[in-house]
Length: 198
Image 1 (cartoon, rainbow, N blue to C red):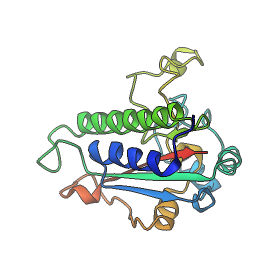
Image 2 (cartoon, rainbow, N blue to C red):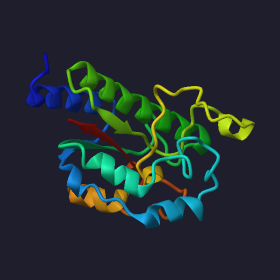
Image 3 (cartoon, helix red, strand yellow):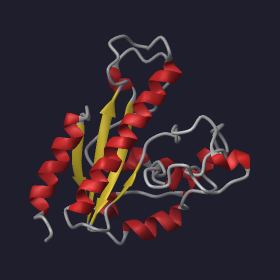
Image 4 (cartoon, one colour):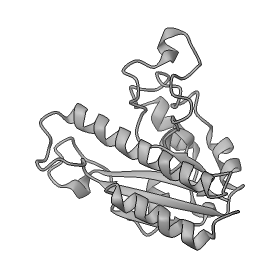
């Protein structure tokens, strides 16, 4: 039996906020913006391009992502601010802090996807955050195309061609460019994930 959507939404909101999220906002999928320039930013500007199975050129193209989004009637954007469990900014070990943040956020959105699936919403799908940090070296660099964590790994919004800035704005969550690595306030480092439900 499919759980009523309002009950599921309450449970998803609670899961997000309990995990440290600062916002859980329902969003109509047509308000999620895809764009070709997003993928260009990955290709020309990100040192991780081509080094992760969840990154371009292996991740879904903007066109593929748009087609997927159009198959859904419900979406939820989740925002986290700053490094979780860090009291000082910037953290002494920013790489470790980013890894812990990314894994926590990605694990949480995957649990939310699974919860929706087990509640009868079998099409539930989520997008992760940042580059994948599950492995120090992705299998793609070893000549394999079989992920070590195929069940949990998801592309980030950016790697799937989603314009996070415009999408966040459409959800009423204003954000701006992080100007440098000197993160002295948690609000200066927003992280976004996305859950689709039908």
